[in-house]
Length: 185
Image 1 (cartoon, rainbow, N blue to C red):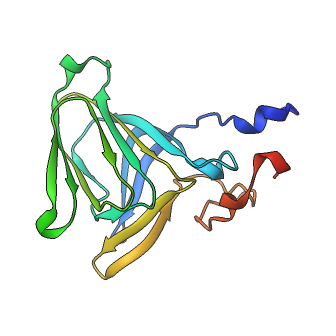
Image 2 (image 1 turned 30 degrees about the horizontal axis):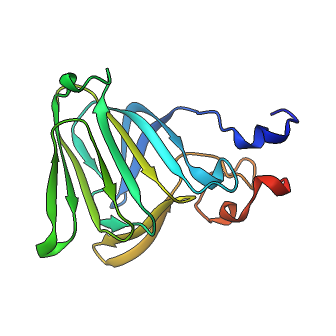
């Protein structure tokens, strides 16, 4: 990193691989994803965004959850040409009797207002890669999840190093949310 004043406002992407744990079982996919994870990568940020190509079927976020801020889910094609869409994705919005399954069968953006329960997100059929971009208007990805044992607050920052303690994997302690680029943190 240079000594330039505004260099702290730049985060250079590092490829990640989709990996998450569901019910104690780690799920890995060798598809490269790229994420900007908010305040842990640029102190003071209140935004999360990722993007990558989904090339196979599967469920992302199997448990319904909600965030305290808006989230946007963007679906497109590898070529960015709508006529190349060849997939079926289903997203559940709401809970119980009020739940609705939104079928994503063409490129689109879905706004999920703050507080709206959503998921699972199921990539049912993927015959051509799907460009997928989740964007969340908060400094760290997470919210309230409806787990088998009840509601639980969970946060996730991926396989990244802690901003505060070099050599340590991020454990979502949330201390980075109080940092500010302006103060030289």
